[in-house]
Each structure stands twice: as C-alpha cells, then as structure tokens.
Image (cartoon, rainbow, N blue to C red; front, side):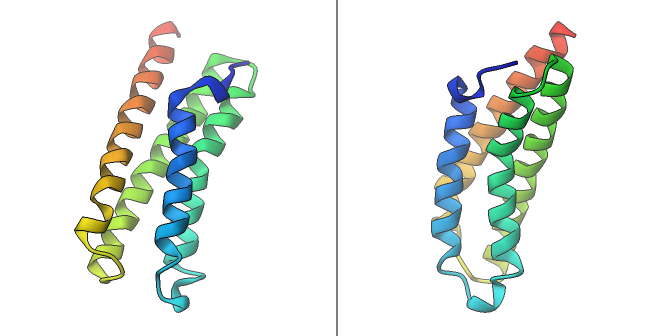
Amino acid sequence: MHNYKELNVWKRSIKLCATIYKLTANFPNEERFGLISQMRRASVSVPSNIAEGGGRRTDREFLHFLGVAHGSICELESQLYVSVELEFVNFDQIDSITAELTEIQKMLYALIQKFENQA
C-alpha cells in the first residue's frame, strides 16, 4: 500500500481538477453532457486512479493505475485542444493548464519508470 496523499503528482492533479471545473463552467450550456462532462471526468480520473492504485496491495497494481492516470492526462490535453478549435477558449486561456498537464505527465512517467525498474 502506498500513501498517495504524500505524492506531489496527486496533489497537483487535485488542483488541476479544480482548474478544469472552473474553466468548463464558462462553456456553452449545450456542452453540459458533452465536452464539459468528458473534461471533468478525465481530470477527476487522474487523482482518482493514483489513489486507487495507491490503495492496492502490490506495486504492479499501482503501476497499472498510474498508467490509467497518464492516459487520462493525455485525454484531457486533447479535449483542451478541441475546446480551442470550437472557440470555447483560446490558447492564452489554456497555456498555463497545458504547461501543468505536461508537468503532471512527466511526474507520472517518472513514477511509472521507478516502479517498472523495481519490477
């Protein structure tokens, strides 16, 4: 079992969720069940999967859920670019978010590498 609450990647992904919720609050109402829902679920998936993996018994299980969290970060990044294409936001609005996504991706990748090297 791993104490996920001590991981900076988990802490930062929690803050990322709040950022995404605030950003999508300004999207058109007709996207409530579309892009808004997708982006919010993807953002929540990151810390949720880190936590779920941390609660599992083995490093191998933890590694699996870290991989799922990494996939959710990539999904969210794509959705941000779709939001730009649809003109719900502009690049200036998402610049700091995509920078944070990149940092979280790097942190997850480093953690994944650590556990893969131990396996």
